[in-house]
Length: 535
Image (cartoon, rainbow, N blue to C red; front, side, top):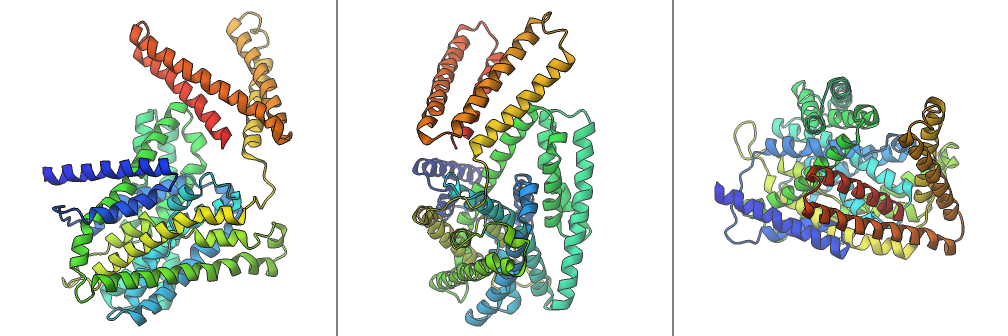
């Protein structure tokens, strides 16, 4: 046990080093994760894992879905609800159905129910992979919103398809009419339970005297509580987690009112999701030898061939669906025509960005090993192997070529949206004006008596002047943008000197380490402002 644990920790360390290499090479780290998972399977003497499939589903999926919901903008999500729904529901059912009939036709011994099971697993693209690949590529805001919103909802819809297909395999009965009715009931009640549970957690965060550590711990517990509550009543735990996550994210400004709480939560969730992504690929690497050995009458070459064919089908189906979904509604609805046309470039990027990832892999690993009667689950290893091949092909091939396609077609912003730097400067101006108004209205008498208030008022006025000049420089031609770049460069040098000074103060031992760490945190926040402005 100790040896296996040490080996898994060592493999996690190797995976993290590969992620650092990916950052240096400016390649999306999920691509390196899937390559690492394949590489781990070739390590001689690696332990064979026998994981409980239910444990995989429960441990990994709730936080992955909750985190995706948390970082989804509800306003943007609602604005582009039509294309998101067409992809998240229409494309999932379309892909699942075609994959089901195709695989049952060309894979010997593969039933229609198993085809739907595989279709439900591989139909949802991975938001983390797409966002990592597209980061800093200047992709239009509309496309990023649609991809992130699609990935959030299609995880839920595909997992419901997976659950129904799994039930059909286990019971050997399936009725499309009954399944359709059950789908809306299961999904709808899952949403109800998710919102009810989120309201309870809202009250806990909002009105009880929590600390930053307790708040962070509660947010980690929330997706599991929502998932288990819904599953207890045989409703969709996935929809409960997604709906609850969207609600909590929308009300987060009321719940988490201190910067320390938000910073603590950011660190906890960033670390948790990264480790879970890495751990899933380590686990598949350790299980691959056993999966390959359990392919039975199918050879590895057969599994690869089937995986390549299924990958080609899923990629082609996405193109066949995305282009009509992008343009047909504009022909039928005057309201849809009010938005600028996506043209051919936007649908091309959305079509090619359909990379599969960790959710598909965790779902495949959650297939039970045994049927209800105790017999072996049919084709389980083949389904997991095909899933891994699909993930490998879509991540590596599409992930590596997507940046080149974006540069080749010279993708531009579609909608009339203010540049990010102008939005940030405008927000700062509004906040500074609000603060200055409060001081003038409520503390006018204290300004002359209290030097600290007077100094803060002067700082606000100077900040307003500086931000206003920054905003005007952004509206000028490119030549004058050099002033802003020079200003940021100067600030970064100042922060670097201040950081060295803090190191010197720590050596002198005159100030406490706690206060020095607070000063370091403020420098970190200041540098983050500049980093976000440069993007």
